[in-house]
Image (cartoon, rainbow, N blue to C red):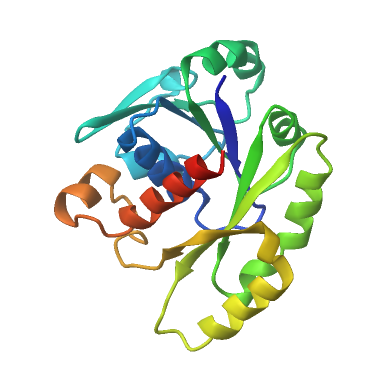
Length: 222
């Protein structure tokens, strides 16, 4: 049965889509069978992949092949009825199913949270990135049987003088929920319309190495 992982935070611009994409690529690199389900009505994920999706493509599995790895991508937006009817089928076929959530609460998001095993909460390494953390955690804890896989710090900048204070605050208050892996901020992960394929082709190991470490950490904690 698949390990169903949600990338969830109602805070915007915290790295949910980037995390979903690069974590999927990392799991695929580790020879696991991966499906990403895109729940956002916008096209951020398809732009990350360089896919020009048509309306007719929604609800259709897309093959993503980067280098020697391959995984599947499914855009469903908020139309979850068909997704829920196929979830048992996907459970049997994949090792990991990663759900990329939009940055807002809705009844359909709640229905999806109920079928997950765990949630990763990406947080940008800025104090304003904590604005919606309590609400996000309360939402997750309100779903019976759903656990917080971990809080993932993203966009870490070792040259930012506020970082030591921020990390100290996070560890003092959420140490039992923290992943050891921290995603460093870099120019290439922040670019719009830069596909994962181009990132790996032109800038080897920038950004991707952190997500590969995260994938290994998740696998080792199972």
